[in-house]
Image (cartoon, rainbow, N blue to C red; front, side, top):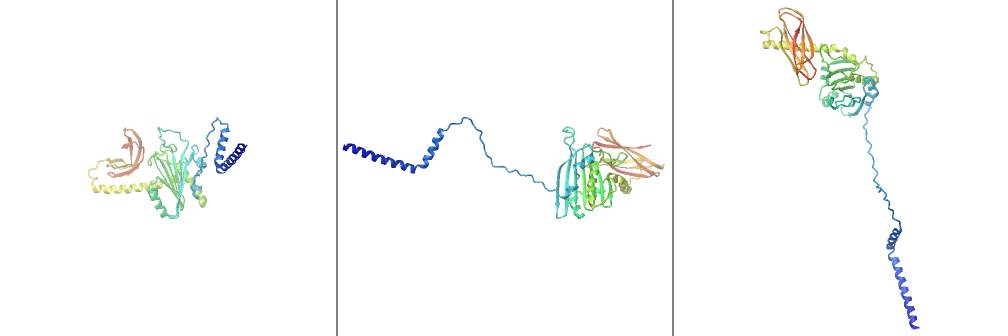
Length: 376
């Protein structure tokens, strides 16, 4: 009996001690139990055999908006693309770029635009990407001396020299002076008012829009018409400026320039006479008059680095007075083929008189030499 009682007491003690240990584990290992519970829960879950695509969340990209510079008030003076369509009719020109700048110190504001013939057929072999383009520039100034400095610094040239050496000049009104010049690669038109300088330059190497390869003198010299682009663009801008300034134009710009052709020719002839007088005095000093031969003498035909051909010489008359002597000049290429002909007249030559001639011409770049002869 004692053994039974002792055994029961011993078991009760063991149970009490066991419960205390379990209670301690619950207090001390609560975090471990949570982890274990989670693992057990995962073990009971059914595995998904389908592989889901991994979704990566990237930080949101903030697109930088392109900041366009404001072109200023002068932008309204540039021809619109619709106005360009009206000017060019069949050809479609579109703006590639527009830029503006302002010089606060000199009170000069400038806007520039570049347009291109987008109808040009892609031709990398013959035309070699030389697509015709037009540069348009409008300069607003307050002081003319500041304008001259700006022009020289930006373009390394003199605005006055451009007018002096222009092919044609004209004044649409008392406030505006215009010029036109050209070469085999294109043309330029500039008009200057009391507040603005407007410039339009076309680069048209293959002369798809106008024939600029004609000489500046002679019967076949270039004549402007309504199809010439630079004069039409400048005229359109002038119309906008003059509307704002309430100045009326006297007609189409190309007509005004053509009507003043005689002015440039008179200036050219005056300059030529002065050069001839200088040559006469110089030749007298050198004794060229002694033992002179009759006919054309001392003829030369030279091309400078700018492609300008300088023609000079003298005609020694015999004992017969002549009302007119016709000289024909033949321009030859490197194969001695005639690429251009020109005639020049010497008028009212007294007997034994010597007349000098001097002129210049710009023609095809394949020019090599030239010859001259008297035509009866």
